[in-house]
Image (cartoon, rainbow, N blue to C red; front, top):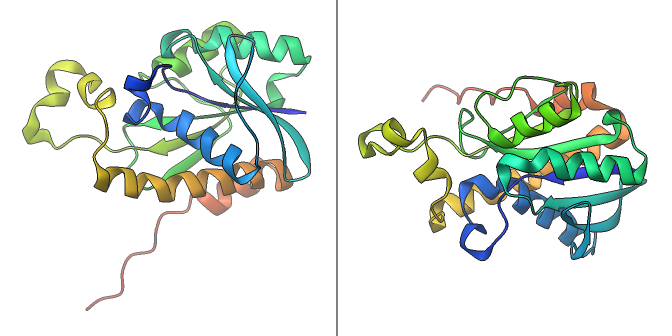
Length: 200
């Protein structure tokens, strides 16, 4: 079994905020797999599914973002899985909206959910799929005073949701490739920069 975790904050007021891109990715995977993420275990909402030939447990921690590691550790322990069996999906301010990036390891870069997971597990060596949400326009001043918090926790408008939707499909395909061909192959496929448009 593999553990696929999406990061976010519980509660309807956070459902369609940028910081909940990880939850939305889990919802997309569940939808495609005809699974329901409704069972409570390991301080998370979970659901079993079949993906790329593997039995997976989809999970959305209910601990709030900055305590995500408590849920991830509890689930790994309960399922008797290793860190190598873990894939985490989460939002990334430093990636443009509509893009994703896969990494085998890395620092938290200011993301409280990632900081919590690495802190509780005692390692940064776990696979993550970062879902780009971009930064708010500088002229709004949102990010200067709050470090992006206002932007992260504000409901997304329709244009942003539409762009994010394509990223969720890419995240699903990325998880499938990590499972079927390994993280290296998935990184080669999904981390390539978009080709420059041809000259006009």
